[in-house]
Length: 93
Image 1 (cartoon, rainbow, N blue to C red):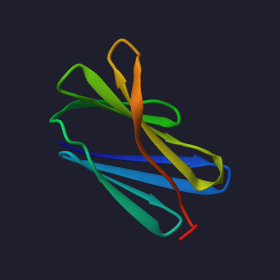
Image 2 (image 1 turned 60 degrees about the vertical axis):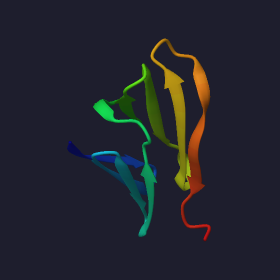
Image 3 (image 1 turned 180 degrees about the vertical axis):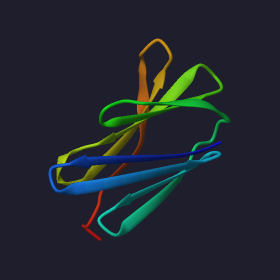
């Protein structure tokens, strides 16, 4: 399963590539790669969110915040927050 998602907020352009269980996020010339541990079933796209549904009745939510801040959290399918999966401010390294 391969999917590309582009999002622009303020002056920041985001690109997310989903390839199997690997998620690569690009922002202003920098990239980060994350591996989803569970098999990916499907994905959904919101306005500023990218949702990755996995086995085990849960999903990963990637959100593109202001000031080049990426946040990814894990939720159960009934909305319970299980924890943070990733966070990074692009351009600080």
